[in-house]
Length: 277
Ligand SMILES: Cc1cc2nc3c(=O)[nH]c(=O)nc-3n(C[C@H](O)[C@H](O)[C@H](O)COP(=O)(O)OP(=O)(O)OC[C@H]3O[C@@H](n4cnc5c(N)ncnc54)[C@H](O)[C@@H]3O)c2cc1C
Image 1 (cartoon, rainbow, N blue to C red):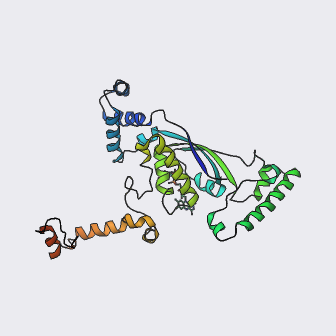
Image 2 (cartoon, rainbow, N blue to C red):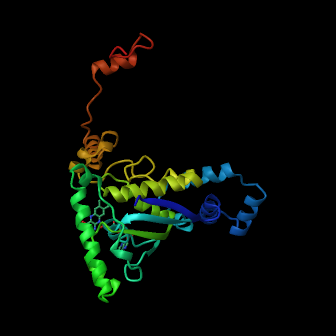
Image 3 (tube, protein in one colour):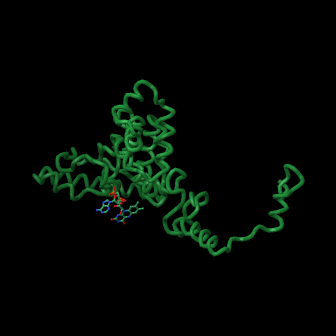
């Protein structure tokens, strides 16, 4: 079963909600007056966008909790769902039950990871799942309730969610789960959530990045070993490298400009750089 992520609903006017939330903090106007000024277009969409953009550069994050998104998520494994429900703040989950839903004829949907397919072991995995399904069916027929028969089922078993998540929490989730250190299935779900938000409110969607993204921390705070192994590491500095640079600066140990650097700066040949380009 393929993974599907669908944005089912969201705050009526996310940018207006966010603008109102921030503006209320920083304005002599009441929220009602701010609302009226938006309605009669004394405050334009562009002004709202620019104001929000500036606020998003600050640490004032609580207004982000006032915008929410509802997603339908299907075809994910129970391996994924164990990780998903660890997110505790600003998110509400409803998940398909294995107590109230009994798999008919012992046929349960499941996910086989690409690595297993590439290793040529998918058939073995599927053969085992057929046997699991047969025993599950036998148990249910023997009167064992689904909530106990499910003890047989693997982490690969698919499940479905309906969730509501606020924007602050979605940013945090993407910080962690778009990072290449996160599990592939979670990265995929987070990326699909991002692309759904991009369709309706790209001004906010573009902030949904791994934490090293230019709209988030801008650097990697994982271990240096993980950073070195990450393909994005080539375009993102590591936190320790930034501190080393800062310490060197404080000690006055920054490498001084060299003769050839000055040659490049003072080059009389317009358009030609020191390295001849
Ligand atoms: C790469 C990766 C590997 C992981 N490996 C493991 C693992 O091996 N084992 C494992 O058990 N989990 C693991 N996790 C899950 C991880 O520990 C978190 O449970 C999960 O990422 C949810 O993150 P969170 O707690 O920040 O989010 P939320 O639960 O949404 O919380 C958001 C933020 O609220 C604050 N907060 C929430 N609750 C409290 C509280 N009670 N007290 C104080 N502050 C709070 C924290 O600042 C937190 O970051 C892993 C996660 C990742 C991304």
